[in-house]
Length: 228
Image (cartoon, rainbow, N blue to C red; front, top):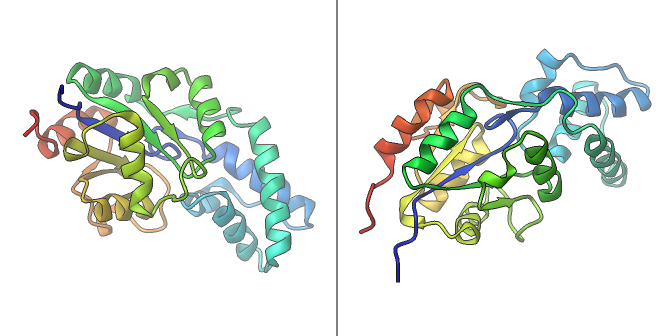
């Protein structure tokens, strides 16, 4: 049997793409509808990173409004519907993403996405950004019975993409990414420009990068070049 290829697994929001504008615009639609004031992007950006439900809860808590479970579910459904219609109004890839993907593929890596977005919305966004076809698997919060920070979200993504779990690396921006990768025994590269309420330096990733031009070097330091 031929050896499985090494694989790089990416988070989406705050890692591959700057999506905060469209996410917070959707949150603000809900806040205004509920009689609350809009949150400035600069204040709300760090609320992103744990999924839409957490973003809604954090947004309403910031306005001093508690949510019942039933109301939270209603708002979540409304969020998903509105966001789906405005998923790429302002969202864009971070500088250097395409070149970094090119380099990893040239080095023999398979690529995958593991996100707490719904998979259909992740695929839609990545198609609009022009890179969906680069990924052997795009796995969302509902793809498996588990989602980050559960490590099985990453390991099952690797399996679905056909990558070698012994030569895998996770690239993310938040505690959920870092904790899931650590629990899976997979090295993790953290970006400094994403969405986190705690600086990634405090979360103990294996490498930290401030631009995608640094990714190839970070991955090379973490992933064996040949199968054992």
